Image (cartoon, rainbow, N blue to C red; front, side, top):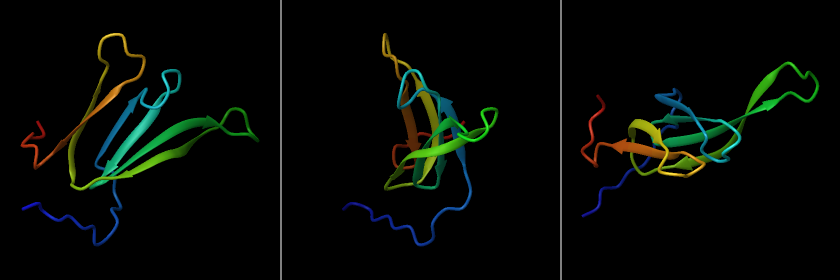
Length: 95
């Protein structure tokens, strides 16, 4: 039987964060995880003030389990990074 996962209260803190080329090979993205929520941010220049930078949330993913660990890697000649997620169900422990 499959386990049922339901979020009663949305997460309020960030548990993991990675800075990598996830969406576009030319832009760096900040990827954060909070319990079962994965968010991808892009760093943009402020339109009014050219010296200031701000984060823009590009994508939000809701997963069916809590994320324990997060890492990225680049395979062969790929121009973007792949994201590796570890869950309790996958029996990967956070070292």
